[in-house]
Length: 108
Ligand SMILES: CC(C)(COP(=O)(O)OP(=O)(O)OC[C@H]1O[C@@H](n2cnc3c(N)ncnc32)[C@H](O)[C@@H]1OP(=O)(O)O)[C@@H](O)C(=O)NCCC(=O)NCCS
Image 1 (tube, helix red, strand yellow):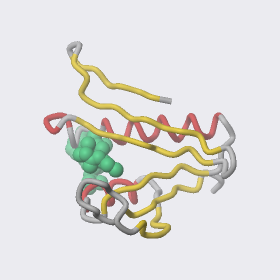
Image 2 (cartoon, protein in one colour):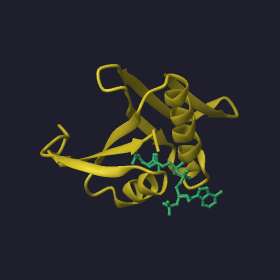
Image 3 (tube, helix red, strand yellow):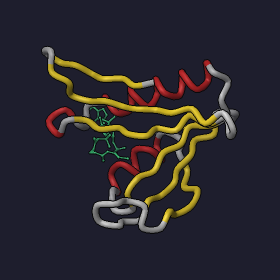
Image 4 (cartoon, protein in one colour):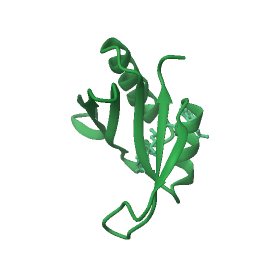
């Protein structure tokens, strides 16, 4: 599932997901909101849509990776039910930053 959010015919946000049928997990591969549109609830809306889609498919979890230093995004994901699973060392190709692997359990 790939979604974009438009305002006045401009894309201001997007989210990509991929289904992992082996683990019954919906993985958020990318999510981004244009800076001037951040902190208005669009990211929360996209993630809740992903949750509904995953539940519709009877998947067990929603997951994503986030940069260790992206404190504001990590806080948002925690508030939406994601919990830290483990660190993926040197995960990002551009600066070799570590990623935190986060997962929200949909069975609870
Ligand atoms: C991380 C990101 C996707 C979040 O999307 P967003 O649309 O800004 O997220 P929201 O607006 O739903 O929530 C952000 C904060 O705004 C708050 N908020 C939501 N609606 C609000 C509103 N109407 N008024 C004021 N605050 C609001 C939320 O409570 C949240 O607060 P918190 O950080 O204390 O938890 C976005 O900021 C982004 O693209 N960042 C840069 C790229 C990035 O980091 N991508 C993530 C890679 S994993």
